Amino acid sequence: MTPMNVFRFSPAALLSMTGLALITLSGCTKFAPYDGETFDCECGNLTWSGRDLGMRMAEVESLNETTYRYHVIADLRNLEEQENREEPRDIVLTLTTELNGGTTSLSLAAGDATLDLQEVDSPGTGIDWSMDGAELSITATPETHVITLTSLSATRGGNTVNASGEFIFDLVD
Image (tube, rainbow, N blue to C red; front, side, top):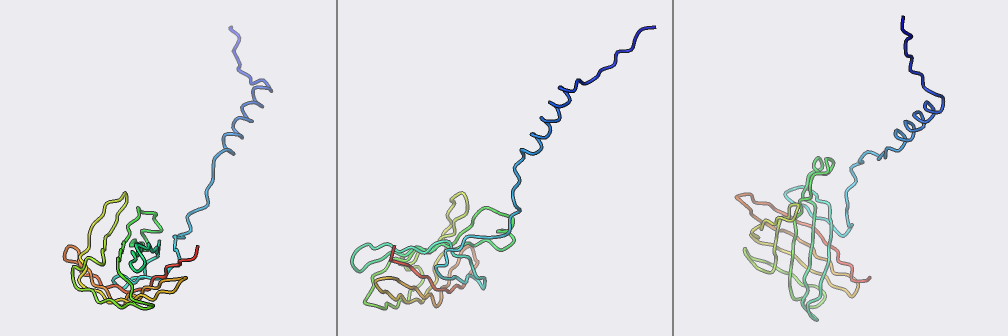
């Protein structure tokens, strides 16, 4: 009869393997679940086709003493897309105009190059919207410019959207 080989762990080997298992399991990074927060610059509001959009940015650029370029970006994704962390899809409004004193009112006709609308999908694909007309006013003080967009109509691929909103541009850094 041949003796049976029995494999036994030495106490040192058992302790080493237990320690390695504990380090491996406790070293996993744990993240809190996504709570649905989205970025909002708190720089105004935009209602696009009856939906309130989250504002990403409102910046103004002085081109000369009386001419300004305004950039507005709002998040076009719906709540479900935001919660699912889908790729960004934004509407970008760019308005270039001359101001006439403290308040300037504009009535823009279809195709007016003063206002440019573009939908920007991640990773940066831009799709132009045709501006069908807009009514807006700009109130300018040394500290802020405020655009009140009374109405805007835009079309892309047979889809017409109406929009309105107010955008606040802080000039004080």
